[in-house]
Image 1 (cartoon, rainbow, N blue to C red):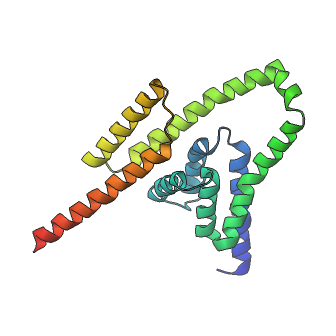
Image 2 (cartoon, rainbow, N blue to C red):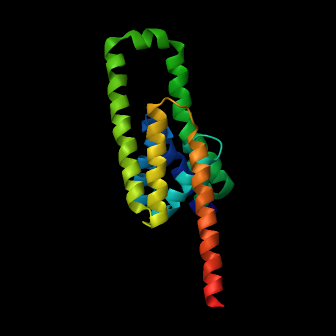
Image 3 (cartoon, rainbow, N blue to C red):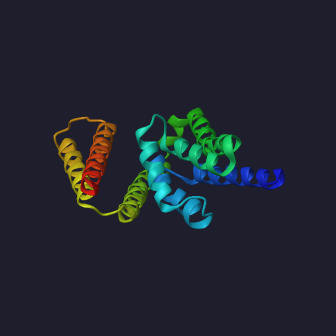
Length: 196
């Protein structure tokens, strides 16, 4: 790849993640749908499986999902410089907007039309997150184990919310990961024994 093409890709990464950062309301989960649209469907930088892996890894590692995703995709497309530019792109819009709002937030939120706009945005974010979740769920390989893990996680999450117990979702993710590792190891051992 020539340096000119490389710099063009780096600039494209920055612009793509700048747009994602500028137009995503509601944080990283709301961004998943836009990342899928931009990076999987339009630009073909990722496959659906890679996006699922990114979401799983980004959710189970420290840091916001948007930054973790930008880091991975940026590195895949443009190396270290790609990671830096993708992260800068995704962070700068939020930083600028929050900084400006913080200067006059109290007066800003008192405006009735602004308060109503925020309530409308909150509703739309819920739908965007739900849509992204359904798309990812449809792409997951369906096995008995994955259905059991999904069902148990959903039930546990709902029960904990109803009884107002605050349990980090990371604990559920780690437990599901351990179950997946153990299941894979047991399957591998049983295949080896069957081959002998």
